[in-house]
Each structure stands twice: as structure tokens, then as C-alpha cells.
Image (cartoon, rainbow, N blue to C red; front, side, top):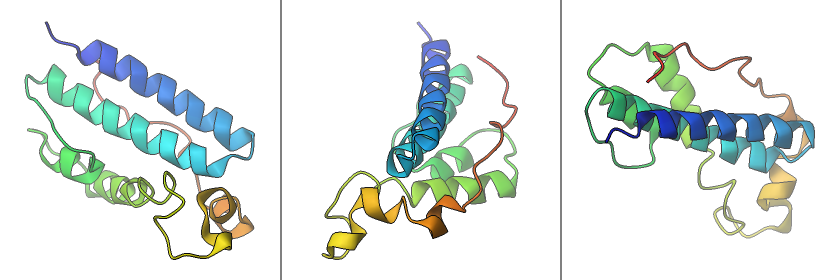
Length: 125
């Protein structure tokens, strides 16, 4: 049984949660949910194409697809990948109280980062 539709459906829910978290000012959760959404969507696409995909690095998962992926999308994935650990763990960054995820990702310079207005138009499983 191919679970690609389930994976893509969960990716959509994770992306919705990213927007909810962003709008609530919980930017660390928005970053994590966006990365998780991308990871699940790409893994669902792998399944849809008859492949298994392992790991958490979205940029690598994109490069392993058997189709041409725009370099811009890979670069955006690298940005999301950089958020995977520091938004999850308070001890992922140097030991300073102002660097815990909730404080770091809620600072004005981080809030100014652009959020994607929509997900890429991948074929739906």
C-alpha cells in the first residue's frame, strides 16, 4: 500500500500549523512546523514515485528525487534545514539565556524573514 497521500495530507496540516504558530507569535514553532511540512511533502513525493526516502535533510531529499528540482527550491530547503535543530532544542545554541529558541526566533530581525506565500506546485499523489 502506498501511503503517499497520507504523508502529503499530514504535510499540509503541518504547514497550516506553521501559519497558526506564526500568527500567534510562536516563531520557533512556525519554523519547526514549516520544516516538518517540507520534509513530509518531499517524502510523500518519493513514495508517490515508488521510492523510499530516509533522513531529515529536505535539501538532500529533494536532490534524491528522480526528477529535476529547481536550484532555488533546494536553497530554500537548505534554509529550512538550518532551522530544524535550533528551533527544537534550547541547548542547540551557545549557552546564553537570550539564545533559547523562543527568544531567538521571536526577535524582530527574525520576524522580518520572508515566509513563503504558498507551497511549490508539486504533483499531488
